[in-house]
Length: 137
Image 1 (cartoon, rainbow, N blue to C red):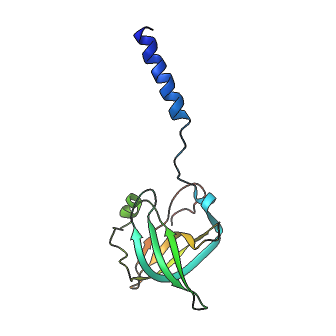
Image 2 (image 1 turned 90 degrees about the vertical axis):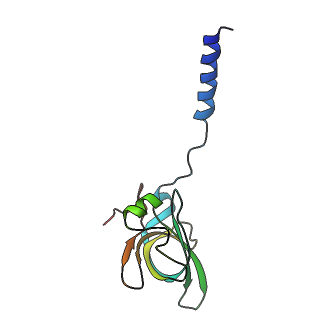
């Protein structure tokens, strides 16, 4: 087989393999969160995970009935949060915060974060952008 045909065949096979590869696991806001279920929760930061594609803030939240729940608050990508004034040390464990966001569609203790209010009243924007996400204010 001539070399040009071998090279062409190689690229055809490579293209067909990559074309069938699964798409990234990234999701749209509307697929994961319900804009018709806004929430406001207050809790103590357990940890903040400052990684791509989304950062997460984990909180211990005590309900009105006294039950302790762990919540995961999804935020924007670290680069987006840095542009808004965040860094990986913005929310040390033990910090009491209030989160305004949108509840997950699956009913789990997860939400898309919007405004995060610190004990001194400073507000940080943690929102994600994407299809179906509310626009930033």
